[in-house]
Image (cartoon, rainbow, N blue to C red; front, top):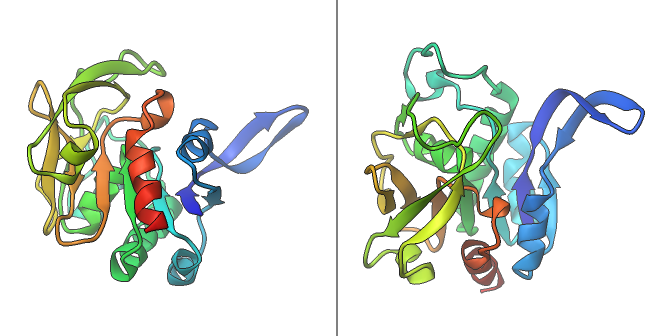
Length: 223
């Protein structure tokens, strides 16, 4: 059972309805299912419930989404940083802390990788170019694994990945190491060697057909 955090939108449309919604692009549950897991959506909730929620799961995925509020890492908001998603920030930081404390396998995707870094005291670059094709259009670029890392054991060779982000890891959080880079030197994966299984990837595996990262999470969750 793999829990996946969700968006929280003030207005979403489907059929005849236009209502507030907790939602998740279908690529996430399909990726979990394709890797042999069962997907459970984790909409934002009271952070005090995070320990109890994670205790019922075998693995946790922090999904992509809006920019992390800069105040979370001691920075002023820059002009091109998006609006704050405070409920998501608080809930997902609590999920990360609960997973780290309990030893539950944890995967951060895009925003999820950035939030993992922030949770461990790291900082972010608030704007960069070249890692999205256009507004609302995923780009593709190559990432190269760092030898000897967890990520390198999952994907031993350089591979092309779907990406859409304008922020990135700056100062690494406590204990984290970079385990993959883009050609321009941007950290594309980070991991926590002191933990059983903690990995963040800057790209969006749910937008492609490479199951290796999610399959590794599901395998760790089964273990």
